[in-house]
Length: 237
Length: 237
DNA sequence: AGATTGAGCTCGCCA
DNA sequence: TGGCGAGGTCAATCT
Image (cartoon, rainbow over all chains, first blue to last red; front, side, top):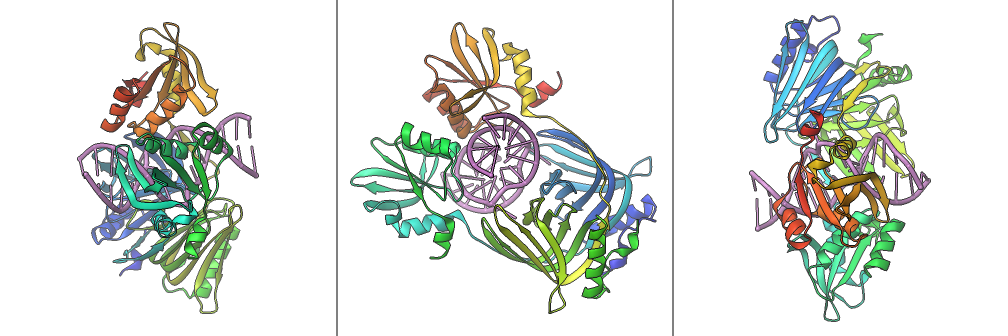
């Protein structure tokens, strides 16, 4: 692998583009750093000027960051057709186009400071906790909901979505909606949509905590139940 | 600005760390590229190994990308305390800690290939469209909802949230809920929550498009109305 | 400081 | 392919 092919500040735009195209042709990730204008047009639109870092992956996906924010300012998901070229004003231009939805992202570098190219790894290793684990924990330990709760099905399909855990309490249908973070009004609404499917059912919202307005609506207005359960309790199991 | 201080593959970990610390001390953005292990522990937890690019901003925010995804694999928002150091095994280690919530992100480089350092810009320029603009457009052009619609208030506070646009039609209260993308069942539920506040009201869901199940519930079950309106129509105005 | 909402959410799963 | 839910969502706004 040739680490010398990165773009340096002294390179002409034409040299820079050649290096970048070569790197992309050999399957490298390319990161460009410099002053640029960014035009995005698609589901929404945006325009920006400033110093950014632009990551171009071999898959065609693009991510653009500015130092002021941890979130990407612009991007293009994998599957986009991404090209790097030079325009009539001798500026390096990155264009990334996707269809369905049709979206166009164009970055024009008025000052390309430098670039980094590197060969991606074949496969990486990833481990993380998920909400599914909490479902399983409750299914295996139904008494955390109610002593009388008998779980029957996880991810039960109904007309308006998936019920996390469905079962019965003393012969009545029981609907359990699980959130791994603080529950809000939207989550109460989700539970209500499921509850509308049944007659005389008992509803539970399970979360590590709940906002006051959400609790008001949940309990006072709908008569559902709140069960406090932290992901950490599940993980320690 | 000294562009020569970037880390090269031939640098020792100790040289690398010195360059990085100097760059960060002078307020530069630092991007590290190499093979690393990533430990995150906080609201959730995760572990990963692989070749990543790590962006460290002067504010302390950190973003970690892998070539396989357009979304950041790990991150730390601005305000985090981020340090770069060397461990007893001569490996470059990035540690980023924040409080409230307490979260720790640690990246250990088993092979730091290279880095890029650059001075961020003082301020960038940003322009983009927002949902507020659509609200204003409807308020100014109420006939897109209904010929009889008379708007009265934008962002009207009610118990369960904010009604986007509130008004009257032939003496009846009218509630308008606006979405800038394809409407789903959740959005119908939101409109319903607002409609529950009034007697004999007329409800409108405004969106560029709507999913079939959402339209079924909206119209057949609740008797509300769907109005097709694209952000692009608003922007052309 | 806490709560709510918007966002080009992306990603994965399943019908 | 479309719909839906999960996510460490973050960032802005207001109370």
